[in-house]
Structures are given as C-alpha cells and as structure tokens.
Length: 257
Ligand SMILES: Nc1ncnc2c1ncn2[C@@H]1O[C@H](COP(=O)(O)OP(=O)(O)OP(=O)(O)O)[C@@H](O)[C@H]1O
Image 1 (cartoon, helix red, strand yellow):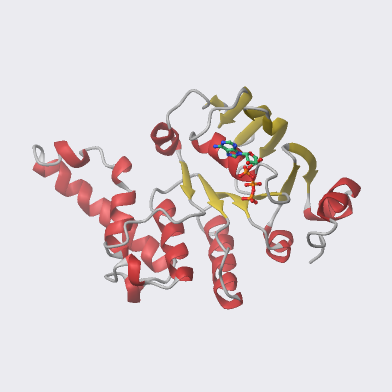
Image 2: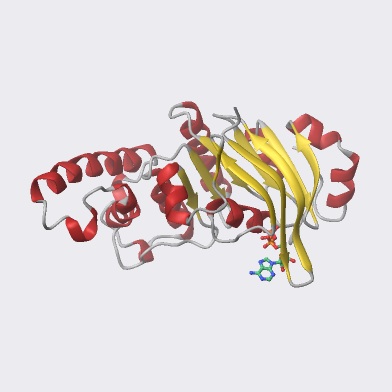
C-alpha cells in the first residue's frame, strides 16, 4: 500500500483552479518531488496534505486512512511533519529550544498537565531530550545548539526548520523548498541530509524544490503540475522525456541535470 495517496484532488479559490483533479501516490521510503512552474499549485498541494487548506473535491489517504477531515495537529500525530518554505521558528529562542518546542505534540504530559504529573513528565522529558539530541547530531548542529535562531545565517535557519520537523520523528516529511536561497555548499549539505534521513531512518520524503539538478539527482519519483493540472508523473528519466513537461518549462529552465 502506498504511504500517501492523492486522488482527484481539486482546490478552487474563487475563479482560480489552484488544483484540478490531481492524482499521484508515494511509496513508503521513497523520495518524491512535486515540481512545476511558479504558481502551478505546489504549495497549495502541500497545504492540502498538511491540513491548512481543504480541497474542494478528492481524497488524500495516509497509510490507507482518509485524512482530509483531520486537523493539522492530528495529521502530525499520525506521522506527517512539515518544514515550511518561510521559516516558522521562534527567533529569540535557541536551536535546542526550538526543536524541543517542535516536539510538544509528541508529549503525552503536555505543557499544562506536565506540572501535575511530575514523575511521568520527567521520564517523558528524558526521551524527548534524546530525540532532540539525535536530530542535532544528525543535522550537525552541535555548535549552534544554544544560539538564538534569529542570529543564524539563512542556510542554517533552514536547517533548523528541517530539524524541527525531523524532531517529530515523522514517517513522512514534507519539505517546502528546503534549499531555496542557499549557496551550493549549503545545498550539498541539505541534499546529503535528505538522502540520509531516507536511507538511515527510512523516512519518506515529499520535496518541493526549484533546483532541477537536485530534483533529478535525489528523486525516485516526480509529479509535475502546471496551472493546477498534473502533466507528468514518473521516474526522473520519464519526466525528462515527457513532451508536456518540456513544453511547460520552456522559457523557465531546462529539465536536464
Ligand atoms: N490562499 C489563497 N487564496 C487565493 N488564491 C490562492 C491562495 N493560495 C494559492 N492561490 C492561488 O493558487 C495558485 C497556485 O499557487 P501556489 O502557491 O500553490 O503555487 P506554487 O506552485 O507553490 O508556486 P511557487 O512556485 O511560486 O511557490 C496561484 O494562482 C495562487 O495565486
């Protein structure tokens, strides 16, 4: 069974069809990329999956279960975590505290009940802390653990944003342009982290990215949107040969590695 099935999803804003009857699926453990020219509907699609937008029609299933009626936090607790394109971090707080806060949906004791059940909350805090430490090590952020996020350069902020999603120990991670605005060394680091989270931890990766080289190198499967419609779905080789995809990208950038 695919981990994520998107079936006939449409989304309308007034007269604009942001998504028009779009279907594709992700197999467990693969790196999947959603691409398309500006305004094609990529972020809208991600918002439908994470629960910020409600499609006008269609179905989205996670491990066979319909998630469309669920609130975003419920989807997170099922195992879907998202790193935002526009970083959603607390700038005055340290890297460590941002990651810890990101995990609060995982804590049974919760922010309010924590005070009443100290025993349980303390034990939970230890597990909690371990997962956060693992993410810090995995993303090579030891040196910036106590640094306020607001003082970090953009590339590192992006890394913390990805870390916040990873700290939720997701089965499926949604990465919205994790390399936008990065220099080539930072991009290489991020590409390595994405490959590692998939190879070492078996996480399924859903990627939106504009860098075609990165997309073609990393992806097992690609879906292409243009004006809200799916115009391609397949392996990088199939996508590069797809005439509709080539046409949609003419004048933007070539679909080559
Ligand atoms: N909240 C909204 N209200 C009205 N229209 C919207 C809203 N969100 C998206 N749209 C419209 O839906 C279409 C798809 O936008 P979307 O941001 O999903 O594209 P995108 O592929 O992510 O673009 P980009 O690569 O530029 O980020 C656009 O025409 C956009 O103006």
